[in-house]
Amino acid sequence: MTFEPNAGLAQPTVDERVDDAIADNEVVLFMKGTEIMPQCGYSDRALGLIGQYREEFATVDVLESIDEFRVALERHSGWETTPQAFVDGEFVGGSDVLAELDERGELEATLTDG
Image 1 (tube, rainbow, N blue to C red):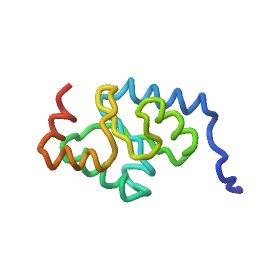
Image 2 (tube, one colour; image 1 turned 30 degrees about the vertical axis):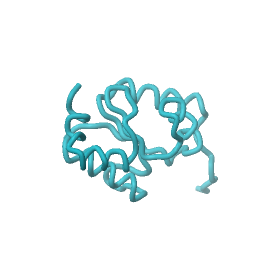
Image 3 (cartoon, rainbow, N blue to C red; image 1 turned 90 degrees about the vertical axis):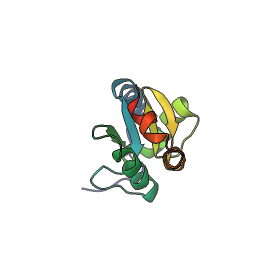
């Protein structure tokens, strides 16, 4: 088996995955890696912040097709960087925004009031 860099998924496939994940989950985090093995410090930080207040939330690993995920996510948030958290279909932010909300005591309400 050979690894072909950037042999990602087709853009329409990724667009649909992103659209469905945002529509079908109360809270979803688009991140590099998985809950068990985050592949970047920012994703790990976002995962931990959300996990303080939510037992159940969805995660999507963008590494499978990162360029296509950047395009798809930018359509929803105006950002192409990850991680990105969405709550009730609305873009909340990345790890820095989640940390700021937590410092202000607003993250729990953001994640749990639906």
